[in-house]
Image (cartoon, rainbow, N blue to C red; front, side):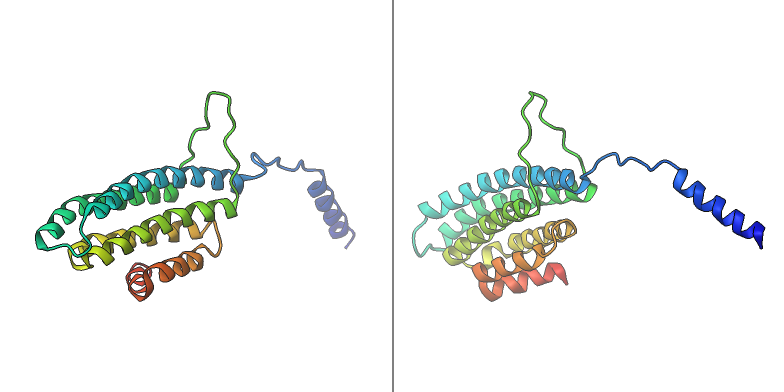
Length: 195
């Protein structure tokens, strides 16, 4: 009995005597959020450049375009939607890979980004995309762009699901924005990606 008691005391003493491991990074979540925010910022710039092309072509179109004008618009809009889909796919790959982007080397510090900041950046991208899709649907209808809009929203769904691991509640927030802007059509198309 004494041996067990002495052995237990020795075990407890050795546990307290071992050095504690020093964490390599005290805030890995923050660094990961900053890295993902950088990926989303790059995506936002690409989305804005493509939606600018789409919006410019819609602004030049007549209010009720004929078949020839719809075909011409489709020739401009569909490649831009494909480029947005490809950019979202690339961003999703970077998020899933957990790729660490290199910090700026010119001595400037990167802007710090927390979960709220990342949510705002994602919502900017989502709002830009769904607002443009809504404008396209209102002007030329869903038929000419359906084969591009559906993969676009599926890619957007994949990105949001990848980021939802880092930012709790992002999925619900994005669903609300898409439903508000696109209505039932947006919810139906978006649920295809999450189903």
